[in-house]
Image (cartoon, rainbow, N blue to C red):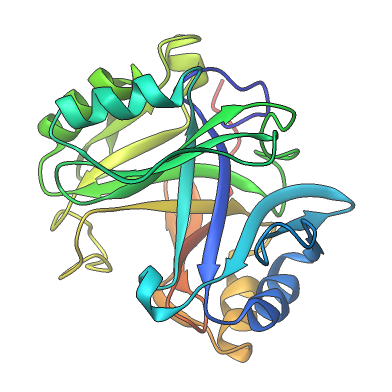
Amino acid sequence: MLTTRFVDGAPDWIDVGTPDIDGALAFYGGLFGWQFRSAGPDAGGYGFFQLDGRTVAGGMQIGAEQGPPSWTVYFQSADAQATAKSAEQARGRVLIPPTDVMGEGHMAVLADPAGARFGLWQPGRTKGVAVAGHRGSLSWVELYTPDIAAAAAFYHRTLGLETSAVPFPGGTYTCVNPAEGGEEAMFGGMVRLGDDPTEAEAGTGAYWLPYFDVEDPDAVVAKARELGGTVRMPATTLEGVGRMAKLTDPYGARFAVIRSDPPQE
């Protein structure tokens, strides 16, 4: 599961690009109780969503030329330059080259060969988000891709990620974990586009989907509708997994919520 005991290859940061940061705060604050703190006058409008004073995500206002509104998942890298080079050698693309962020760390944004965007965060003073795997914070990430085998090979070469197959209703599910910690450090999965039983992913390109932990997915779905969001998949229970829903915020950024079932002994 996701924790803040970050290791190379594991998600350590997440942020949303939105055309209306105040509107995004109203939406996510209404859903998760988040507040927003600016990163300062030199940060270009970037800031931090916080829960009880601890950072759960970042966010910034973007223009149309910067792409559609979306969440970006960042993975820890001890050397963002080397990781970006490995991604290029594996037929990925560097969209934003590794850049120092005011001494807090180095960030980069890449795309895998199928076009899924993801980020790198090389920790400096900021190690990553302060909360993960708890109510109102990031708890799981999922890659939707046309070719799981190709994606697994790319992320293994680029980030050292490992995959494993587990039984799942209707077939198997490809789980993902960093090299350090093995399957006990599992943080996400991969799903082939077109195999999603809800058809929520029909017609979409490859992308990473973040899941946020919530107490009551049904209540979150109702609140999201009230606040102008869109329900892509209504609250649904998967045996042995939990109850989840897939949503977009009022500007089109995709995300999901989940209340996980307790581990079976």
